[in-house]
Image (cartoon, rainbow, N blue to C red):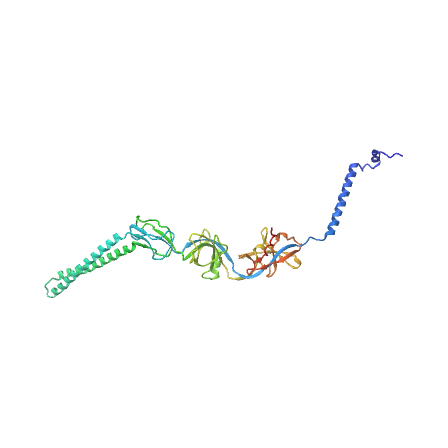
Length: 401
């Protein structure tokens, strides 16, 4: 019996099973078989994914004070614009520009010859005045004897007495003129009124100067001031603390942290009504000369009395929109979300103000991005230093080439 042709075979199948529909049905059956095989393979390989590794460190409890940071500018405690006290010609400059000078050191010499001549003239005038006074005194003594015998009139005696007193006054005037002349000779030697660092010489030898000319300037360097502006709240906290001289620490632009210690020695007598700030000043020792007036400085100052607080590393804190949080790893490696209220930052450690973290609880300091809510983690507890900062292990050395 002859087999039916292909066209006849398709003809006997139901109308719904066309060749195209049969191909689609086979493809769907194949996909279903593949998915079932994958599910069996996953079940054969194990259960839930492994716990992700994270680094944790314990929260610490320390005694801290609230600190605020400020920007300031250094200024010299003493600053002098050196001007001559007498007019004359600069004879010599006795210092090197920018050098350190001591109090009383000779810096400029003004030609002293005119002042020496004036002193000699004043001295001769004093000698003449004393001679006239001696003569007047002798004449007054003779007149006194003659007056007793009524050989001279009372009027003549009074005139001689007046002349004697005038001679005494002339002596005092001549002595004052001589002192002034000698003082001008001293002023011709221009000396440093304070110890410090001298600027450059604004005039050189041969220039005619007077009392209006600035010869140079000197800045005291034994101590420096750092001026900064504090807010009204800062001022009120300092006043409430009751400390007469709050401690301040300072760092320069090229220094990490605040390595230099000083004291607030001045608070202005009023707040600026436009800015709401008050000018403050801190004093720092500059015996080593490392501070130069005019440098920018960053300052930090405690604005509260010491209190006990729980602190966590700054790097452990995450941000969720406007919220700050940490993850605490509890029993079984389960991370717990804790919203915190951050306080002062002290040496890399942040104060937790709302009590959501207890001392000794382990917070995640590395691997926050690996935390999946509801999934446990594999914590590695790190050691901490005396400040509470975690100590991360050194990276393993790679194979030598």
